[in-house]
Image 1 (cartoon, rainbow, N blue to C red):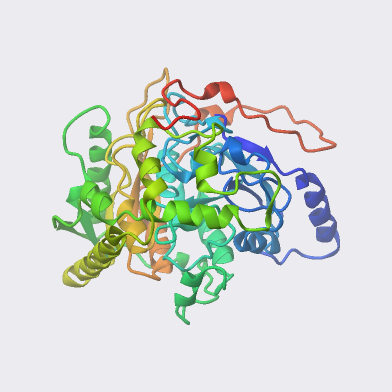
Image 2: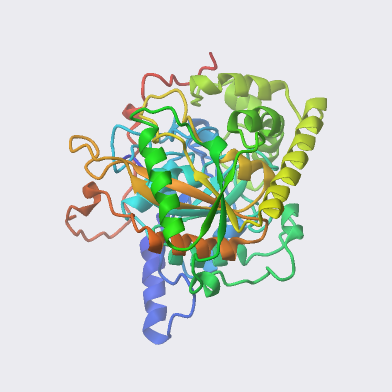
Amino acid sequence: MNALIALNPNALSLADELDAILMIDHAQRPLYCIPILLKDNYNTHEMPTTGGCRALTDSQPAADAPVIKALRDAGAIILGKTNMHEMALEGLTVSSLGAQTANPYDLTRTPGGSSGGTGAAIAASLAVLGAGTDTMNSLRSPASANSLFSVRPTRGLVSRAGIIPVSHTQDAVGPIARTTEDLAVALTVMASIGYDWQDNATATIPRFIRGLDYSVGLHGNSLRGKRFGLIHGFFNRTASDETTPVNDAMDATVLALLAAGAEVVSITSSYYDTPNILATCDTQRFEYREQLDAYLSDLSIRGTHPSSFKKIYNGKDFLVVPSQYPFIKAAFASSTANASYAQTLHNIAHLTSRLESTFADNHLDALIYPEQSNLVVKIGSASQSGRNGILAAVTGFPVVAVPVAFSPPRLDVAPEGVPIGMEILGLKWTEAQLLNIAKLVAEAKPVRRMPTRAESKVVRMGYNEVPRIVPDSGKIPDAYPLGVLG
């Protein structure tokens, strides 16, 4: 799979310390001894934080990101860092440092992204939980592609400080898990930070949300009487081997919801058109350079590394896929001072208002739609096409991804089939309700299963020290040349 970039050199000693505590006291912390893998854009004091970029190989934070401190305080063991699409700019999960990660269900396909290394690793049970980030689709895409659950929280619920940024408007952090129960525990811990002066979006957290335990509301209720809006504009109804399995999966999911007593309302508004939202509301090209410059110039980021966006992309130790060349070139000149940036923020405000109206006009509990209108793309593809995550990304509304099906199996490459996921989007600060709905959907339509490749027995070995991971750099497809921008 090539899912990992590094292992925590202190993981074994940390586990021993926690075991010693457990011998004399009962574990009261919610993640006690739970191994967690992090996307390699989270600051960690004992491992470099690279964003998958060779130019940042020796970039060493002096301190953990606040969300990592929260996970450690809850008893978690940070097991290591996972590969990601370089600097979280696409969804193919290929990077100059970590190379190409493969999907454990179909090694000819990508694992989604940009948190694809995390998704692949959790699907294959290399850890109990994963932590990822999401600027466009990056928590939900790997969840969908690896038959997992993820939550992109309301903007402000979880501090984004200490994480390599892309867009202040769109960035979010959250967990990826194999069950809704694990997801709820992880979100509770990550959100326990509350207000963080390093991320002013956290000042918007309502009083009734602070300190909420998302496990409490996970159980009970039913789908009967719930009203879901099905966004028809997020489908590709042109029949093909790549789209038909997704359409069939969503049609079957709607039938399952109806059978459980829910109502499903058709949402046909032209506002919900992914290409148009991308063209009019995406803030990344304005914010990326400024945000990355601020991160790289922070004195707490030590080690040898480029000090700015331009020093990375004027060098040779990076990977940008050809479809992203125009974006990086635009980012050299674009900034938040551009008049078009103000118009983009205005467009987001208008879309947010329309989204709120859609909920009110149709008396909805949530909106549903496929995370990706086609199967996750094959390795070597130009981009991770067909994804629908931009709606939540720009509006800041919360969304939970759930597995709903597999494509028909192909014994030669995909013995279980390729996973297919659905997004459940709610109003701001409704994570508790969305997680409850996700659990009910998973119970009404249980589909998640491990990849066959992960079920083989592994020889148990004794380690005196944590082994060193060396990513297979030979796995970078020829379609993605290093160190060029066209």
